Image 1 (cartoon, rainbow, N blue to C red):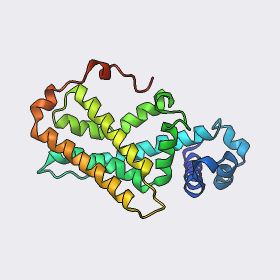
Image 2: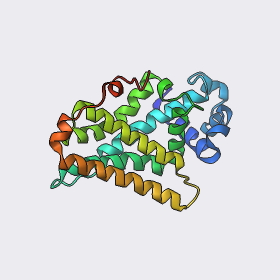
Image 3: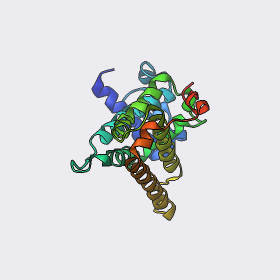
Image 4: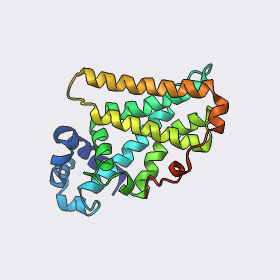
Length: 213
């Protein structure tokens, strides 16, 4: 499928999810929005889940670009972790339909983190590459790097899970503020103790966990 047509289809998926949610979105509706027949879409995507995953792959690339483009003061390069983490999260917060697709694929209603496939699992971690690079600049050991990256991902996904974009609630603000405070605390801890970050290790049983197996 040509890139222009593919972009049209992915836009239709986003619109359908934004208007009706993941559960009610179907291939026929997506095809109609994109100006195709359902049969034409099935020639390129085997089903609704494949369409969701195509959008998610595109979203992860955009989130990665947003994190990479985050502004970091030249006078304070140690602020890169917070800036890039917030930019990655802000992308999904600003695009709730894409956040819903991320949660769907990660949940038991989708295929779960351990079953999302090597391709998407790699793209998920690649999207956080700017964040891990910032952690490396703070002196994180390889073991601590893995732990901090997964902790951030877990926290961010948790906030997206409870955040309801349809409501202006205190819970939304508290959840977002809590994540910001967590990110800031990680950065302050690593800046204050670079030697500990470089020497830090994780328990053997944690290091051996296969998150995508």
